[in-house]
Length: 309
Image (cartoon, rainbow, N blue to C red):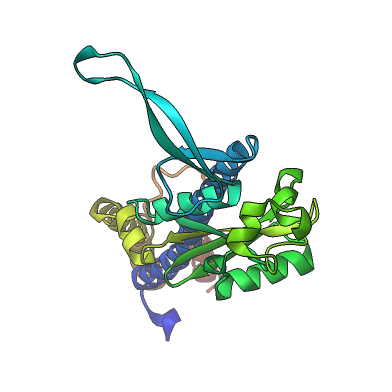
């Protein structure tokens, strides 16, 4: 039944099918780009976290003033403070508290959690020293895969966004606190005990940087990319193609059909070949020329029959 339809109708159907296929390819492409963009954002967060940890590690510990929410070491010192109204500086007591790389990174993650930043992160391990850093379901599965399969990262797209886990390896600076518990600093053992978070060796998988990047609904992203102008241009392309088929193909075929019908009745017919070059590459031109040759041949044949009779 489809073959019996007009060429215009058939072209419209084929165009819509082709457009649907292109739309499907565009959907897959946009989805891949969007996921890669989310992954790139997560990788940037992990890079910054590792850079911050490396900065703290190069000093062993950092000391902060007056922040005793969580700390390892405590140091009371006297520092100079300017007196009022230009008086000579005077010494006043000040308390400093030490943070090792792991503690500094955890507090950094807590600050990011409370910030407007969309991407959040935390550090966790299969052998956590602080129970508050225990891995969730995704992180536990990612840790297992990283340790058993030798992976460096694990990515998972969920309905709520992208989860990203990057392996963190023990460095020499980490072993002081996470190696032999007997050799660990006393303040570390006093705060966390000696049962968990120890026994690591340099080069071991210490844990992961776990990043969460929220994802917007795909159709919301698509609407930002495909707007009214894009839809209008697609419609214009369809109209241009349809007009081309109508005027360059369908109307010429109608004319050729009408002329062929006249020829079949032995009547004069205009095939519209007056301006057609014999070497034209247009298939409809060649069809018209062939029909004209057929008309001439038929006329010659009919004339010969009349002469014989």
